[in-house]
Amino acid sequence: MLTDANVESSHVKETLKKLSLLWRDRAMVNKGPLDYNSIAFSPEKPDFAESLLPFRSHPRWLNARPELKSAVLSYAWAIYNLKTVYVECDIVTPACEDLIKSPVGNGQARYELQQVMGEALLDEALHTKMSISACNYIYLQRNLRPVDYTDFNLVTWRSRLLSHCGSESERRLTRFAIACASETLITDYLRTLSDDTLIQPICQEVTRAHAIDEWGHSSVFSVAAEHIIGSFSQSERAYFARVVPQTVDMFADNEMGAWSAVLTHIDFPNRDEIIQDSHKIGQVKVYQDSVMTLLDRLGLQAIPYWTA
Image (tube, rainbow, N blue to C red; front, side, top):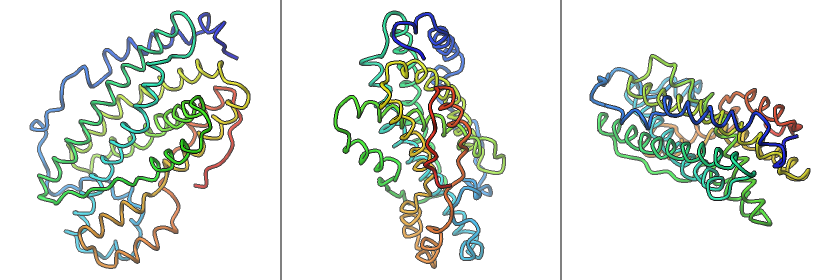
């Protein structure tokens, strides 16, 4: 088990150094802003992958008019980006700030941990800007009225969990566990969109750029967890192993409240039936292998909380 006393002699410090060096070449923030004018808009292409809609097989959806389905897919892109903003701002950023302000460990490894978290924080700021710009770009191209939604289940669940914490150290641990799981999971979710050549080219490119950074973040948070786990008590290790699978469950949530808001926003026919029936459908597919691998790597016994 890694501890503050021996972490300096472990591979963790060197791995953090390598990740920081890779960031200089990999990070989108070091390559300048994405040029939207360089990628032609294709009106005939959908703005989001229909395969990710929770009601994609519902008869009411299948029989809907093409223009309505196109509008829903455009708003799906907006909802996806709005949720991304909340994840970056409310989940990942606070965890980065915790480790920048008060890194765990002694000596040079503390600096390396601060360094990679500072770089991740820069990335997250860019991702937030990218999501806002990408969302508004589609609104303008499609001449759509923006939809506002703030009640994402992953974020509200996190707030409830934090409110039940009995100490600042428990809140800090909770913030890190949720961020660690989220940064591991988002890479798998992004792959679906970034590899989809059938969607709007700019939407594919935005998710591809985001995915490049998040693949790096998955490694950063995994190595950071490997470093930090040595300072955990047995009860803290068990708590971490419990919160991570819970995050998987919430990350995979269909966010039917957001879809209800979208379908109401455009007066989609039979929307109540669609929403009610879709609540019964399984959650969005999220790959769990990466999270299981993380827990195994940390020597933690996974608690199979997820229901998908």
